[in-house]
Image (cartoon, rainbow, N blue to C red; front, top):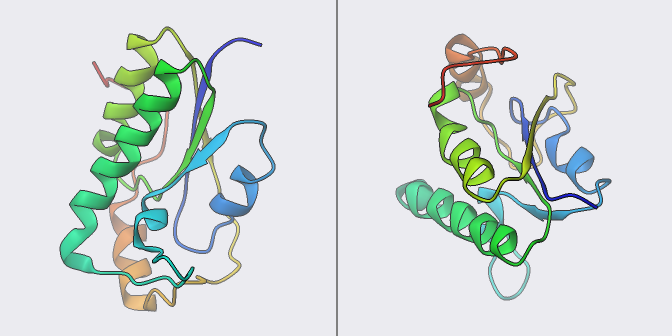
Amino acid sequence: MSLKLTVIRGLPGSGKSTLAKTMDALHYEADMFFIDKCGRYRFDVHRTREAHRWCQMMTKRALFENKSVVVSNTFIELWEIKPYYRLAEHFSAQFQVIECSNCYGSIHDVPKSVVSSMRKRWQPWCIEPNLG
């Protein structure tokens, strides 16, 4: 099996995590950073950047260990994908982006106003975006 890095993107409640769990790869997402030792989700907006750094670090570690990875985050703007694209290049991993557009409702109770704001900033993926 060749090394692969898959990025799953979409608005909150679009099915990203559900899809990621069906794939044969290690699964990471920034939301995992906010799960405490008792398994409770404790989101802290002030630690969002730290959560994304953690997600990138876990992905890098797995790729270094020659393990395929799927990362499911919102990735609203294309620049957010860039670190993962570069990791795939660095480790010569196949890179894939999947967009989810379902509407199941957010399990983390993201306010509709926030989802609406994200929708307005959404940048669609194209086959060869300029991520270099």
